[in-house]
Image 1 (cartoon, one colour):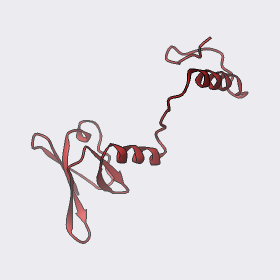
Image 2: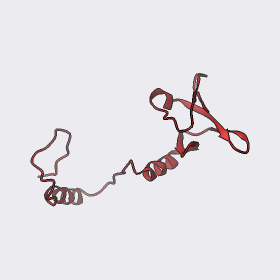
Image 3: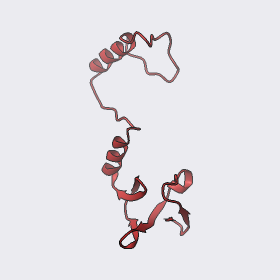
Image 4: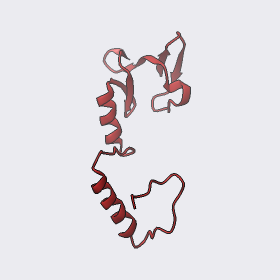
Length: 113
């Protein structure tokens, strides 16, 4: 069992590996989880907590970024010049034979004319 303590004094128990989502993933202050040698491990005092396998660990913003990048579920963008962006956008639109662009969604960003 993993016990999560929240701002305001509430706590909730979770099974190892059980997803912690929604409101249960917010306002976390302390996580107590089993530890083979010590009986229990207290994870606390950071802004972010990430799960590696069935264990939670605390991290700062840079640790969170590393965790997200290593997950394979997140891609980070980068700033570039308008010229490079437009050249790549035009190539992306016209270079794909199996995905011919035939229209635009309202949410899609278009290249400069």
